[in-house]
Length: 406
Ligand SMILES: Cc1cc2nc3c(=O)[nH]c(=O)nc-3n(C[C@H](O)[C@H](O)[C@H](O)COP(=O)(O)OP(=O)(O)OC[C@H]3O[C@@H](n4cnc5c(N)ncnc54)[C@H](O)[C@@H]3O)c2cc1C
Image (cartoon, rainbow, N blue to C red; front, side, top):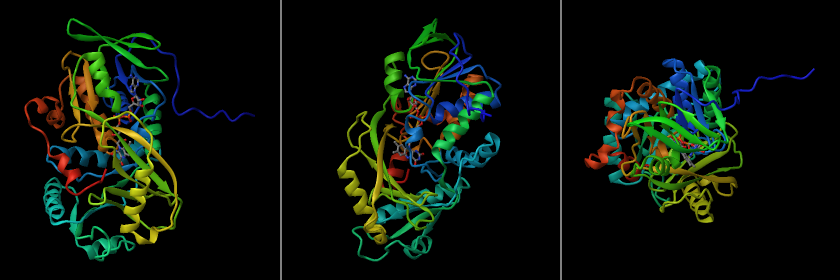
């Protein structure tokens, strides 16, 4: 007898009307669909994905999650995002493999330590566990670290954030797709959105490669393609640059890294997967492009940086490298807006390095925004108008000054 296992999500035909259309079957699109269906009883939703779900950053990221961002606008958002992983694991009845092993950021200069002091204070003010640690404490956390004066960038201290860690990224895609589909959301893969119809200042339809859909609401959650889409379909010019991020994994090793580590000095981060591989990344090409090719230069950089910090890794082989695209804003904070410039048009983009760790909470609040039409307070700072008003947030410094942590 055939084993008739149920698929995680259905593949029904495209309808001609939906109460909401979501462009992009990535992390943010699927999470928003899930929260619309489960928290707001809006279930007549199409998630339109031009390739396959998880094709974008969703399936390429290095799965790091944490809440110790730098600014007061961002920390509460990421704190709630972190708190949502165990909740979603239960709700979705799907093992997202949340492993809160903690994140250790290394400081290699007085300036980096100073920035960490500020960041730790902000985190603690918002109830996020984040502590400054000495080089000896870094070594106690990761015994393989070389804390002597030998490395090119000696370790002067660090910031340890115990509740952060890693979550299995493809499980998140599949779990959200399963949960949304069970509530009636229709996921359409291999269909591209090519236009948005507007009548009398309101969204009334979406054009796709399979025809026109009427709908009063559309969310642009197209990740790295969202800015080009906003420009082409809505005439909106978003201050987003698309850059390539590369990552790689080594051969499996015995347990070596109990925590995620990152270093702005070396521009590197690494964690050990459950299989034993060291997953490592951080490099971002410095010029805008849409390529997902990797480069030999980066493999060399990563090998040199890793072995300088963790000398026991000399001779270890990389098994696989890959790249994905990041939609970067000038202040490294996202853009989440609605009903602007037309009613029914929403966008959730500009997540750069941070779109995996944030997808739970962004989905939750974008769903609320789309269901009620009014912007939840927590999302107010992320309006694109901040750029026109020169009110940029300070998340850039969170990356540049000391941390390659994503
Ligand atoms: C190598 C790498 C490592 C990373 N590591 C981390 C990390 O450790 N932690 C972290 O928080 N973040 C990380 N990120 C960033 C994170 O992956 C992204 O920010 C996140 O995936 C953004 O989610 P999204 O839903 O906005 O976009 P995506 O997940 O990219 O999904 C967008 C989807 O939209 C689809 N699409 C585009 N145009 C159309 C269209 N016209 N019609 C239909 N569908 C369309 C695309 O095919 C894609 O599937 C990393 C990224 C990369 C590349």
